[in-house]
Length: 280
Image (cartoon, rainbow, N blue to C red; front, side):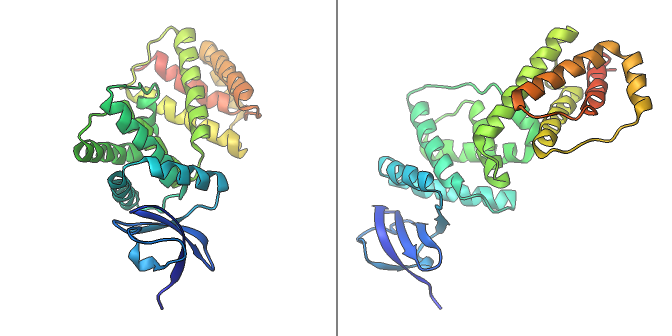
């Protein structure tokens, strides 16, 4: 049986907000979907290429205010790219990406047309931590550039990859950016203390970044690591410089995250730091 909705607001020719008895407010997107339609008209789910809920009031208000200022063809294109992302990731995307990516891409395209470029200081870290999202984001950037006739800086791949990861994991973008800033601070401290230049294209650097990321996740989740006391004494004796630096990194993490860090993390960090000082 066809499910019918009542249109509450026509945002443009391609986007309408409608009300459903069970789902409440639903956003429907489709080419020409809103043409010649008005508030109170009845429409079915089958008319839309894409439907999603905006249960967060702040996000709904942002989306409603955003859409009238964006080219209608771009809305249809973004819908295509979101379907592509969902297909490539093989996972349902959190609905907030409709607002976040629409907002981001519209401004990114405007910046590109004005030749205003932003660097992405976490680009290599993002590629290391989220390789699948990065590959999909790279394809999306190519699609946007071809469709819109613009050129994006490489850093844009990283920004879009973060949006994709946020939508797949339901982790807020602000939390991800906070963690990346912490990782950047930790790696700067490592370079300064060990007097090493971290080669970002080397395996040990990638291992370090992944470990720091997992360590931060464990702090957020309150997970503890198990370790033998004998290993702790061995590392403390054999690698005192790396061991002491590992403790400094732990203190930075505790202060930044405002949460306790399992002491066992020191041992694993010591091993990673030792690899950096003796890469061969």
